[in-house]
Length: 459
Image (cartoon, rainbow, N blue to C red; front, side, top):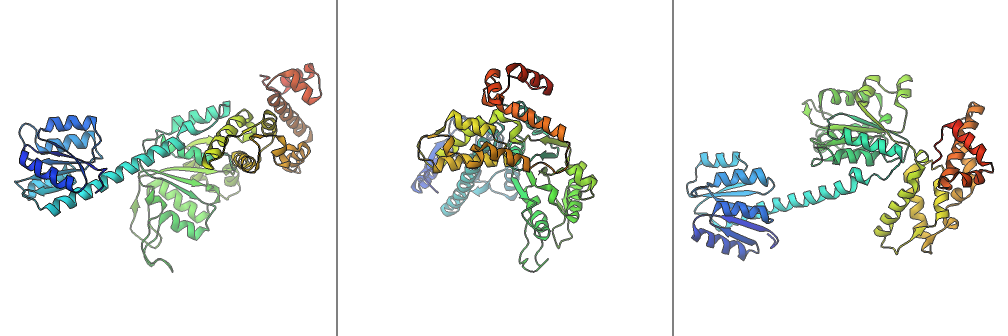
């Protein structure tokens, strides 16, 4: 194995220590040889060790005690146990306590080296997995959800409270609001964070393919099924299964999903043996499931199973105070990913971004920021660098009107539009009421009347 692997040898017989140390160092390992078990255990407190090789029969502290203490305090370190008194009973005993392997003295050099090599490979895999988990936690933890608005603070509180539980979570919100990011934050701040997070987009596959994708299939269950395949439910065992666009499930798949949520077991496609799983389901939808239930398109019993903890995500237009934070976050991320020199948006450009309706929400904002940074030649991204539909206020207005339903209450709709324009003006004016009134072409006193009428906080 690589010289990066550090092997700790514990044996009260100094001759064996010397032989083992020489053998392993000749193969490129870093070796620490200790003839006292207590000293060895203290060494583990202060040093990074990949594999422990310990003798079984030692005075004061036995090899089995060393094994038990290592597995309790450093469970990811493989332990090899050696003894001159090998027997089936003692082998079974140490393996029961978690030994990686059992080697009888006198040992074959090749046998020992192979066992150490395999243990070091396992330790290396554990370390890589741990680093990956830490990177994922850093990337998707709650602290990576950008936002200081009241709406997002409420979301973060719900995520923080829901994460430790086993409860099923339903995340609702328009496309592009960050539902998968919230699902990952729930997983990586939960007790299941060391287990898999498996994501499935229920809209991306037709129902036949999706069934096999979710539940797996047995060999020969259909044309092309040349081998047994584990589905996403099995892959997520012990962890979290994220079902995006859950409103797209067909009635047949809704029934099968309901059964899994009720019983935590299922059969693979073409199989008859039940497969039991321990999973937490987090689902997401951009549709109104209650409306689908009323129309008979979504099972009410499945809806109630999914809707245990609901986390609604606000659209970006309802959290405008977060837009400048999101822009700064995306700028930092995109510049780093593309190894680009520093760039930033002018205050005027940020005002336009803040005032836009963002029908595609955060996903659309990120795409716009990336386009401006990649295509812009200047260090400062100004209004002229923005896409035409964002800097053209008439186009913005027309786009917003086109999104309105044909049948609506005109008076109520006009009031909602007026309130939205007032909020946008306040944001652009940085909540200076005199300036906001100038943007709107009205007096300050009329603005204050409108603020009271619509219950808008003017600061």
